[in-house]
Image 1 (cartoon, rainbow, N blue to C red):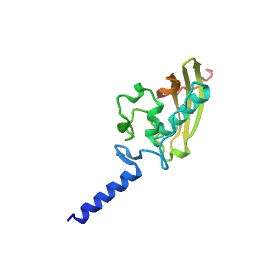
Image 2 (image 1 turned 45 degrees about the vertical axis):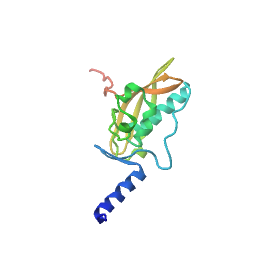
Image 3 (image 1 turned 90 degrees about the vertical axis):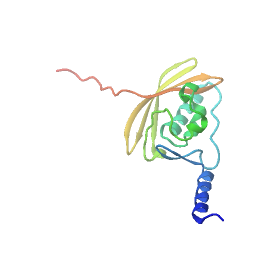
Image 4 (image 1 turned 135 degrees about the vertical axis):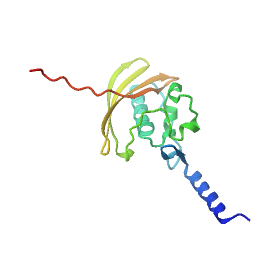
Length: 164
């Protein structure tokens, strides 16, 4: 007969598995959104599709909310050899914006470069607990859809002041 503590441990593991929660070095992350899986990456190589991929990448990978949903939004290079299961842990090679309230992040996108097969934008992220930070995101057209190929913080540049 199984011991009560062992049965309680099995029940806890089953409950966490049912919720889709996985442990990572940075805490607990939901492996998938409640109520179903991730939305499919938008098809097409129009401007609206590129902007949607950028927005969804920020909402998932960057703010560390439902990270697994960003796996299909990035290039193989951005995967850095991680499998889908490893990506789901939340320990991913994407510079985060580690706010305590991901749902409150305001993102402003400013296009920087737009040419056939490549779109680059500056992204200003803002939250009450972290303030503002600016990043650069690049998406490339691959296989009839846009994928994120680059994400990094931009250096802070001060506006020139008159010498006098």
